[in-house]
Image (cartoon, rainbow, N blue to C red):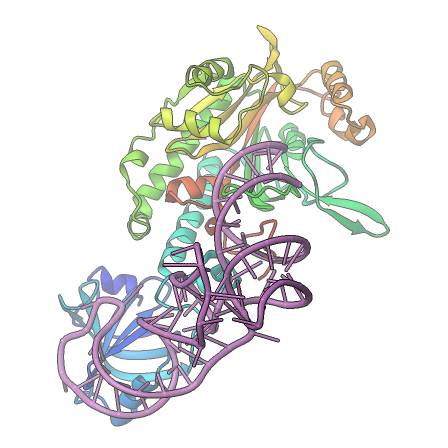
Length: 430
RNA sequence: GCCGCCGUAGCUCAGCUAGGUAGAGCGGCUGGCUGUUAACCAGUCGGUCAUAGGUCCAAGUCCUAUCGGCGGCGCCA
């Protein structure tokens, strides 16, 4: 039996036994009100002086915030109780009496203080709601791909060299040699498509950049599907279906959590295919019209992404960026080789990029040429070039940033709340 | 890395403009209350005012440096 069952009205007038943690306690002298959390929800439990033994009443009186307890009692529907239901306690047992002065108060705290107590902060209703939504999004991603014949092939976290050759990597000692924490699993899923057709990896990635913004973590999770024979257009279709599935699943299964977060559901309810598509060139024109000093050829910055993101009600693809500002492996557009067959998906409401994807170069000669142009060490990519030597096929894929997706769907101001234990340039503890 | 703001009780902050004996709310503790909703009421404990140096009769307050944090930008996803 769980608190969620009680709040759903399934156990009214039934005798229940539950274990949980004391969130707060209020007392009216002869009656004490305990708010108890069990992981599925929070419910009020009352202890009446004339209904329980002296020991139970004094034990209840002793309880400190976050003490763990076991209670037995009768479930009652009662309008005076928050949530409409309460347990009238008959018996109470203290499992662990928490130390007094629980570090987190009921009033506001600063963000640095909260992050320093993340091990306790994760218990708060808002954080529970966010992490429940995160878990639901992860499940939705996997269900969506598994049902469509994808195979999970995890990429290594320890890697020999830069994947894209641009981002700064965390270096770790490796038996007298050097290794690096992965910044993307993409190159490895490009290998497994020749074994499975459609694959994905889903794991943590690492960037050693000193990015100090509300949308960056040094450790974050990325879903990276890769599909043999998928064209650029096939790729976009899959992305809009995936994002729609994620949003609809969260709306259906995590309504209570979105309510806790006071998330306006209307913008999420609008999410369904097809998403708007604008070219990078059109985006530049839009920005210039709005007096942003940006030239064709420059990458889009945070304010530019925000501007575009706010212009559309649904997620919007910005496609065909100049090849020079994008990764070496992206297929040039046959109609205009200056631009790549790539697209970033911008979430609405000002959130900006949550997906980056592209068709990959499948021609050996062209790929070798790009590796050279980007000044990358060809030797490190020999294994990757093999994929173009033995049964190369046109293929596409993308990377979805999990935390950015959580941030958007929960409408958070900062990405650090979207992961149980965030890692940022100034935070490695706890 | 650049720019801006901030460091005062366990927490959130006021006090700084205009230098003159350290404050509030919350939390803790003690007591009260038989329907509380961030419960309430009374009492009580709690401080190297980030650190170092300087100006001054006198510095939490003014000046300099350092450290830490936050916000924005850049890098990046």
